[in-house]
Length: 111
Length: 111
Image (tube, each protein chain N blue to C red):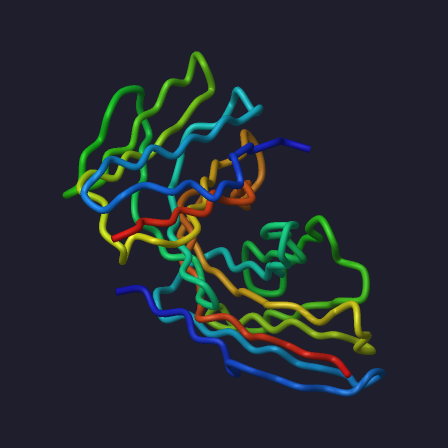
């Protein structure tokens, strides 16, 4: 089975903090993604990576950056957390241009 | 922006009935189509994939695809209360790596 693991299930951070969300996959997938999910807005793509050290902006990259130094690990960084970044963050991986497999999600609250 | 449209629901069906979930998409170049199930507070889980016109059956689930009409559906036979969840339709784009997701249909199966 594909396993995508996110480092935290719940996080509470203060406004202005730098926040790191980590994601690891164990299936040697080329592609990894970060989404956020908010009620009524659905899944929105923040960033994705199609190879080590390669990244592309998604639909809502502002206020975020990413890092992919190793194939299995994709990190999302909130440079200076704000309350409007309170959300469910979902990491996913895929072997190609097909189905994606999700981690368990991180519910981030910024206070 | 390539659109994937779903009725938000809630769709309420009695236990044992057939639940029918529908999805339309705008990208004529899309080739692969997926249904995800998402329980409240959890991450999306892949339940069906379909790549060619027609029906694909897996247990109580049947996915239907009509590329000419740009329409995908999911039928759930003998619906159970445990099927109560939000169902997300996802479509591969003609170009790019990330799936395009609909906002989901909420299904409630009542005992």
